[in-house]
Length: 352
Picture 1: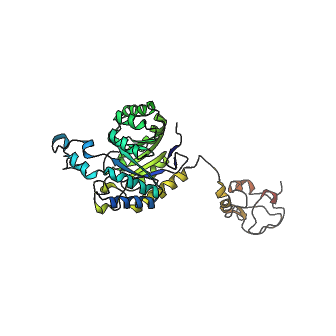
Picture 2: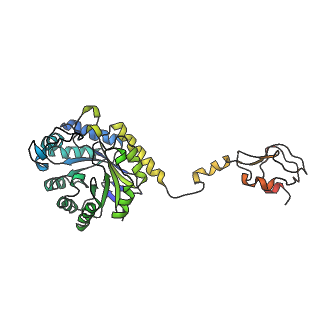
């Protein structure tokens, strides 16, 4: 069921404007001052929430610099690094969470995070986060998902790489723990991602298949993919956010800058407003525009008793006369009284 979800002071659902999340990730570049500036810029851009990631290098992986623990893929944004060193660079110190969350609350945006193990969930519960995010690479970690679901908070799940069978297991794990307030985010787990690989048509299918709200965790550049997702039912949109890509950082290359995030907030809201309902005919706002349609007018003076011809009548603007479709039916009729140029044609001008 696509019921409305409450996150902080915000209602999330198709009857409400899209819930926009700015993902800080490691874009603080290990400066708390910069992290707080990112919060301020996100709030100024109009986002509804700011998200962190809660882990340490030791809770994510092992301190090994070779083999499976070293990134050698030439297509990988982080090639040439060990997993441990990457997470050392990217993690947000846990003692920063509270001041970052407090600044969010002061500025009226929702603070929350992605936990990557049980200890992170316990820590975030101590800060009373209003919701949780499950990352794509953890969407098959059913013990973690059950732990998060047991908090009773809304859960947002990125679905990157997950098969339908794996998502079914994830959704079952959430529901078995009593979690009914969850959103599945379509996600392409490449950094950056391409629009061609975004497959947004999955959104309505996923919504129907799992009977839940759907959204987008978007790693593409620009806002086009995210705006398009709204028309296919996305209620939540998450984008990585930084002050400036030129400043560098682990996620800077595919993160949005403040002006871009502001445009995203505005344009996704416009897309949502434009969805409306299935509707034909003039809307209430268009009623005054009807007068600018073409209609039939007398275009030269015609004396009483003359026969109406194409020389006397044309379809022109404005729309006070009969519709143009009646032209053939009127031609050849006798005019009972003199008609002046500029007279709108109506049935009562003619003998019956």
